[in-house]
Length: 253
Image (cartoon, rainbow, N blue to C red; front, side):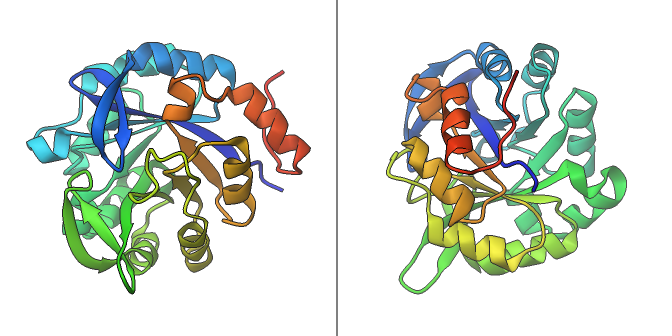
């Protein structure tokens, strides 16, 4: 059985880690390099670094921060935000990232996923999907949750996987920052529809939330931000809890 992954997410704006609720009301959470180093030391399996304002501001991702994080950690990390081209992906990988997360640019030009997979390998390509529930479907949102589309999130996940994405980072906008639990139903639906790993994001509040999304939700990994940033949960304690609940995780020795 493959071990489930615990991923710490750093949403970065203007060089600082921030966190809000449902993508708004951002509050400072600290220096991204210091936080990344701490989570690496504590036993996170991966780190995801997201430049949350880059796409909306029409600029590229912060290469200097990426390079500094690469020097500070000894675990894999993914980077996203403002990624628009094959060159952008190459620059981030050259700066030390192990994976690149693509959201808006992939939706606007799906061929980018296929091109990236051919050039760098699917293992480097993460399709990021920000999804929000509507009356009869769950829709894809772009530009950091600011722009609604008519696309169904599950259908887009299927297409993205077929184009070459190596995994999917699925964020529930409804649950984001609420600490009320992951969107189990949505996560399970996407996991059942694709043959690549699904990372659940949005809503982590308790250790039980992690256990539920990694079992009933069928997620391969669970990502969280504020519950780690503000010391609500520690990664070692979380992993011990999951192990006791029968969830296979890597325990740092």
